[in-house]
Image (cartoon, rainbow, N blue to C red; front, side):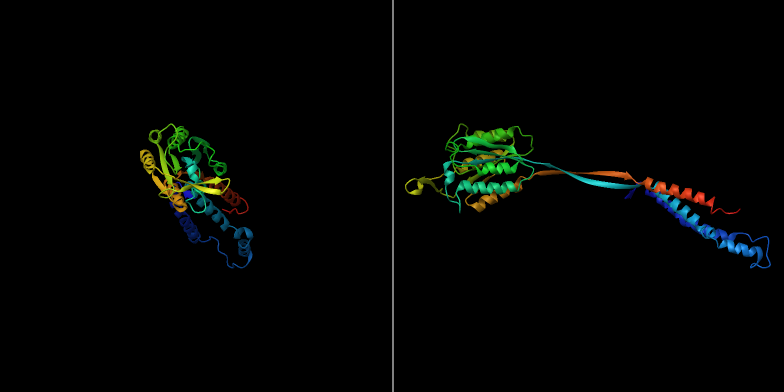
Length: 335
């Protein structure tokens, strides 16, 4: 509670002054004109008995009512108020297009416990678990690109679609330029202040109709930041395949990662390039991106002030009314 006009509280000093004055007045009354020879008999005895009645004992109550009512009136003048402050937060999310390479080279098993595609899917799901209020979509690409999930806040649905991603669903190849162009097209109409693409691949651009440099220029023109991730160990890795006779075998073809192009894309759009050579480094990359691109929260306070003067004024008026009523009825003084 607060007071809008606290200066009026200085009037409370009147209360103790009035009390002191009221205590001193009876001592200054004049002596009785008629004297009695014996105060214990006759009329004097009747006066003595009258002083001990309930009405006489209740006389000080009038002063109490008057002082309390006056105090409440002074507090009313000070305008007590109740302030209620409320904090509101508005989340302004960012738009993210995850762009995942699903070419045959993503079968390479140079990550502990899983191949590249399964490792990437697992780490991306961890990334989704740490995002809130952001619209996230998914573009997959190989020799062509495809928007598997448009921008959405429904992360469970996005996770289910990610789980269903398999190698071989698209024509083989690595169309990095087409993938980035598709992601850019999806983000172009976004009204979000922050738009990013996280492009993960393990190869070089060898398919599609749009050059990676051209796609990067389009992204930069639309103020889309691109984080590129090159996946795979130095020197590449052999790609496994299923042999109907001998089971699982490996092709003697090593994957090649075009780091130069990925760095160029990142630099042109204001993003960064990362190299993931194992599961831990890939997790760290997505964690770092998560720290870079945070959801913005705008917080503002609203203060509602409720006047409480009425809660003091009404009791003050009632007490004054009671004091006037009693002083003119049961507690009336004889002049």
